[in-house]
Every structure is written in structure tokens, then in C-alpha cells.
Image 1 (cartoon, rainbow over the protein chains, first blue to last red):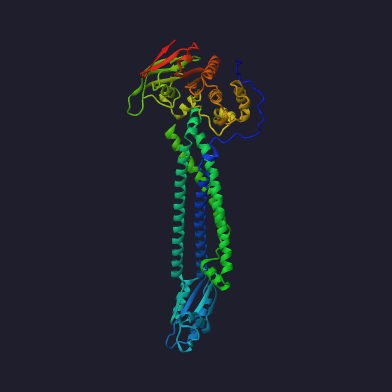
Image 2: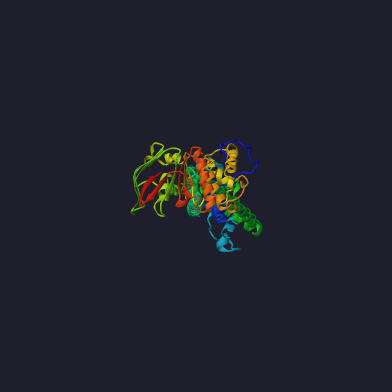
Length: 312
Length: 219
């Protein structure tokens, strides 16, 4: 028998890459991709919901914050029109106030229509009157001075809507916190699902792991081979779920505009925002994809390394 | 090169299946490891392959006490040892070429650096025409030659073989052992476990007989 001396013979020009050491089919592929896609969809939906609520609350709070209202109760001996003019003048003289306007009797009647019904003659009733004060900059407006000045007007009181805004912010904060908690739980469920899938994969590929150990493969090499597979799966699942969520938000945004009557749509928009995520929200949703892929890869790597430490 | 000092091995709380093993194997030697089924041949090979630690005593390899080695030390030591199994243990989804190249691939070597060597070795073991065949398409003899090629492609100092002729016919068994003998002639220390005693009569190599948990070297 001729001696084998590692002579450098010209190799066959196969021109193909070597097959992956961990066979694609042996990793619980399609099921895991579907599971991760669902988890990504739920994560993106939750994140989108949180972004929408927060944006609406911030917008709403800012709108309300730019306006204060002076209420003038009817007082015996005081002339309402005169009190209104005084209140408007005091408001306009206050630093940081852009404009002040007394609501007409008709406008006041319109405000009461939902409670009293249409066609009620208010001229016979002593109803409070309102002065709407628009602030140029809520931070610079001297509300304390206005409050103090209004003491000179009998029956006048100032409503800064602070309690309203506080309640709104509290409610929005609770929804955001709940959303983030749900997001965290989805992540934990995703991690657990990947851990179980990885353990199953490792158990079914035990023979490959043993052979790799026997031929001198390090644990980090073996973990890397499995991690590569799981990273691909995580990325695929994340892409599917993230893309589906983005499509969902776009479709629902259009649907709200198309299905609702214009006036109702506008009211809904004022109350709950425009159902538009905006660029930052969209970027947040896209970020779910690499995050899910990274979570999949890191979780599987840790699980594989633990498995290898117990078997090697 | 290999030295067992008062080595004992038990699984869990069971009885000692190997006990008081004291022997030395010189570099470049060829030993048959024989003994009845269940005598502990595979366990002894696992001790040599460092996939088991003795419950007592010392296993010295290349002058180092393997019981004191950490994970990385064991890995480095294991890379000096090749192993051939009775059931071949080729990866079914890889071609003959890819299976044989695997030990070099796990070391991070570039394919361009080892392609020619792998092909040359496969030609040397008679598988030059089966480079791209999957294990399912190989005969028992071809699988075992591929497994042997995989075990020696990294040029190990020690080659262990656990019943390598167990799944092939007598004629092929003879040819496979000649292949091991050829590798030994080129400097590799070989320990070949087998219970096919008539086969051993064709070769002059010493026998390590394992019986009742103890080993005796003859010849």
C-alpha cells in the first residue's frame, strides 16, 4: 500500500459550500418560526398600542394645557356683561396669554344642549358664562397673577383643567405601564418557548453533538453552529410578525378613516388620536424584528451551552 | 505516552467495572484490546478518549495527569486522539468528503487549506470515487473506511477503534486492520478493541486482555 503523505493533489472544483453541520430540518423550524412570528406580532401590536395611547394622551394633554377657562357665576347686583369684559381685559393683561374671548349666549346654549335639550330659551335662566383664555406658552403664563386678579371680579373662578390633565396622564400612564408589562410577559413566554424548542433540538441532535465532541469541537463552536440556525429562525419569525403588525396598523388606520363618517372620524381622532403610529412608532415596530432575532439567538446560545456543559 | 496508574472506574454507586489498571503504552505501538462482551473494553476506550474520568487512580497522557485538566485542557488533549466506532457515527446529511473534513472544519481551518489533503486521504482509503456520496449510499466497509479517514485526517498521535470490524464481513475486516497497521507504520499509536480473536492471529501486535475488570498485556 502506498504511503499517504498529505501530497497536495489538485482538489476537485466542487464550487459549492459545505453543508451546515446542524441540518436545517433537524431544528424545529417551521413550528418555531410560526411561534416566533405570533409572538413578534403580539409584541409589535402591544408596542404600537402603547405608542398610540401615549401619543394621544400627550397631544390631548398639550391641547388642554394651552387653554384655561374663567367661569362667571351670576351674582346679585353684578352686571354679567360688565364682569365678562373685565375678566377678558384682566386675562389679556396677564403675561403669557395669547387671547381671551367670552363665549356668546348662543355658544353657552350650545354647550348646554346635550344636557337640557335643543330649543330651550336660556334668557330666562341665570346661567354661568365662560371666558376662554388661550395661552401663548403654558409654561410662561402667569396663572397665579390671573387667579389673584380675578378676585376683583365677583363670582369669577379660574379652571386650569389641572385635575383633568392629571387624571388623563394617570390613565395614559397606567395603560402604557400595562402595555409594557404585557410586552415583558410576551418576551418571557418567547424566551421559554425558545428554551424548550432548543432543548428538544439538542436532545434530537445528541448524536451530532457527541460526534462533534469526539472530533475535538469546542462547546463554543457547537453552540455557534446551533445559534446560527436559531438566529435565522428568529429573524424569519420576527420579520413575519413585525411585517404583519405594520400592515395591521396601516389597514386599520385607513379603515377608521374610510368606514367612519367624516364628523365621527374627526371626533374619534380628537379623542383617541389619528390611529397613525408616525415615523418613530413605525421604527419601534421595525425594531421588534432584530430584538426578537437577538432574543432567539441569545436564548438558544445560553440553552445550548448549558446543555453542552452537562453533556461534555 | 499512555500510562494508567491504579485506575478504577465505577458508574454511579455500582460495582467497579475496571479496577487496579496499571499499564503503559509506548508511542508508535499497536495494541489489540480484547476480552469478553461486557468486560469493559468500551469503558476503557472512553477513559482513553477522556470522555470519562476514573473514579480513582490517574490516567496520564503525553506526561500529563488528565484528571487534573480543565475543560479547555481536555479539549486540547482530545484533539490528539482519533476515534473510530463500530457504528461508524458519520453525520447522515454530510457527504463522505464533508464527514472526513469535519475535524478540520471544527478547528476553523479554511476549506482551501485542507481540500487536497482530504481528497488524497479518501483516495488512499479507496473512497476517491465516493467523495460526494451520502452515508446512506455507502456500504458498511465504505462507511468504516470513511470513519477511519475522519479519525486520522487531523493526524492524531493516538487512534482508538471500538470494534471497527463489527459490522463488516471477515474479508473486509482483514483489510481494515491492514489499514490500521499501515497507519501505525506511519507513526500513529493504535489501540483497537475487538472480540474477533481469529482475526488477531494474522497480526503480530500485543494483546491487552480485559477480564474481570483487570487488564493483562500479552505478546
